[in-house]
Image 1 (cartoon, helix red, strand yellow):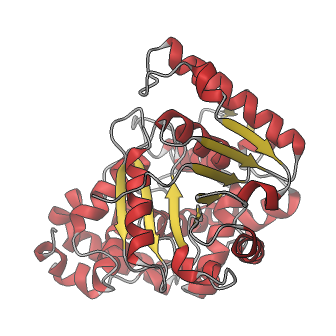
Image 2 (image 1 turned 180 degrees about the horizontal axis):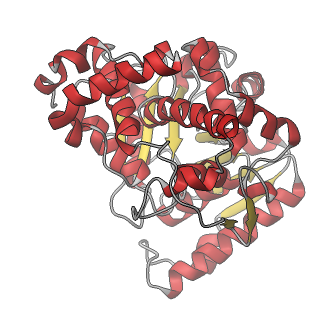
Length: 396
């Protein structure tokens, strides 16, 4: 059993959506004697404190604070600080949750390498980027690791823990042990242990690839004069938001930045299309700005009632994810497809592609080949493991 009793002080860098939620679950775990939340913006820090306190009180009222410690007592462990050097000077574990820009993260990790104690573990909450590149400026690559959370962090079970090329086994095991102590309303945290990094790791490797399809559909709809509501209507009576509303809810800037990163690291085919790029240029980012593909009011999209356009094919979405999952197997990122399906369920609350893919891979292979011919997106060509069914031998 890994000993983490010497990990007593946690520093969370960045108090936006992810940072404040990480701080909240860390408080709920009861394993830290001190948690310090850092941000350069005092207003953001103030809002984060209100968010965390309100969240803890609501859970307390429902009897869902797993540690049994009153919310008021949990809050006594939490501190805020603008000065990065002060925040990390006595930290045993640091989690970075700043925006997804490589230069920003590398600059931060250079400072963390200078300011944090030698024994401190430095974790990045990046959703897609190379742990190795982020660690390269730190001067202590062996102590840097990926720790990718999924929002709402209080609810969802998944944390992807990812090794960089120089991450030590000790850092990896301790990070896993810390992650397993963090609570989730849907059950015990599921730690996806990823020994070999690739852009997007598991969940975002699959979702960004399927967003490539959605990005293409947006341009198709605009070109043909089809409202985005008609794409969402294609899912019929399926529960939840349609694909366009989901993009808006997540944030078009997040989708755009992920596609741009994959464009630079994986394939030029990931270059964002005209429709998405124009929204970004205009600053219309979806729910967070009140307008994106749709207008948003009180956290909900305003949608016109229209019939489906027959553009969005849920099977195509799954076929792309199955193909990407098979690539993860080919590349040795994971050893079996059960890990991919379990990871998707824990992080996205939806089944992975292999359950249905085992029955449909031949049909989906043909669908993908036809779509590649139609769209010109060569990256989506079915890989050998998918075409041959080789993945069927690799359950675990």
